[in-house]
Length: 141
Image (cartoon, rainbow, N blue to C red):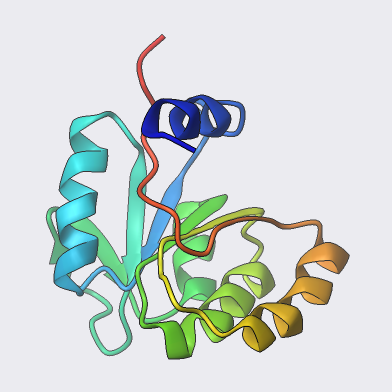
């Protein structure tokens, strides 16, 4: 799927009510993509990075965990910039916190990790885009 098709497919889930949390916001790759998403109008309401709660990165408030982030920001979408070996736990934490759309850009996620999370996502009616996907933007219009 090329970038134009990716943008079109994501537009059906992104609107002015989409509030995004970045899981792994302290990672350089997350900050790089966050800058681009902010420049395109994506409503990033918070980030999660353990032991960094109470700080800000790129003017974005940082929380220690997804439960706190969702409680404070009322986010409904998460984008995951985490190493492949913790992605399953990050997905489950987001789903347990009430996130309904999860975008995972991480590549090389073990297939058995995805097999483990899939039943939980189905039960909680959570949409997973990825893994191995890119950033999300909300174009004007």
